[in-house]
Length: 293
Image 1: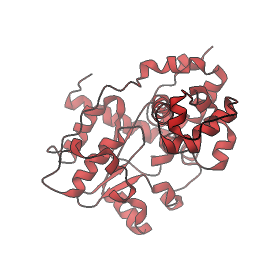
Image 2 (image 1 turned 30 degrees about the vertical axis):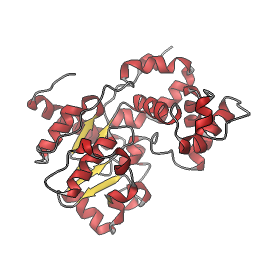
Image 3 (image 1 turned 135 degrees about the horizontal axis):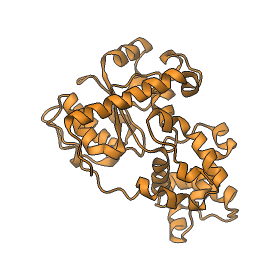
Image 4 (image 1 turned 90 degrees about the vertical axis):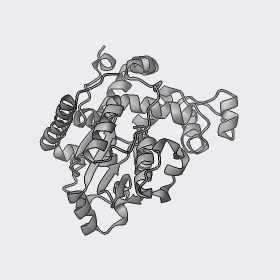
């Protein structure tokens, strides 16, 4: 793990902020879907912003980007001092929708006031690594909701799997699951987006957190999670909260090429276009090794 000095961390943060400002300035309409300001965002579009009124914090959580651990931190803050060790808080508990105060629960004038005065932060991740992580977690494990609502349909439509087991448990026991390429075809299928917006675990990060309409004070990266988390907690004056240590995740940027071996070149290029905003806004390099002949 690379350890950054305090000065280099500040420079890195300034660089990320600058990247966002420049990209939002040059391609605002493209990155906002034509929305002019916050007034154009529906309550549904603000459902990922968690508010802590006591500490003046707003956190936009992105599934598959350390959101369980950040929700643990937000939960500990909400309970008040002496702060509970976030690591001791159940991951299942913090994913219950009733555990947090969400920004969309306030009237629009109060939403605007909080966004103006509170410290707002989010954490992002390499877009393709995040997709791989979502696929591994939701389709290679026994997840009944994802099996019934997504996996069975993917296997039928893209693998020609006429028979699919009744439950996720039965499918797992039979070794049946959508292939990674099935998942990519599902994302690229125009029918998917027509039916309803992408499920949050693979919805574009920019569509979850609207960084060209909300000016974030801190942009963390999963690739530098521990250092960024410590820096943010210092900024917030919360050094007595310890961010949970992250385990060595099996989904690394180095393994991306291996995952895409089964995905045809044209599909890779289409997928990049689909997530291009996330690459551009958050400073991730175009993955040319996957997109060139």
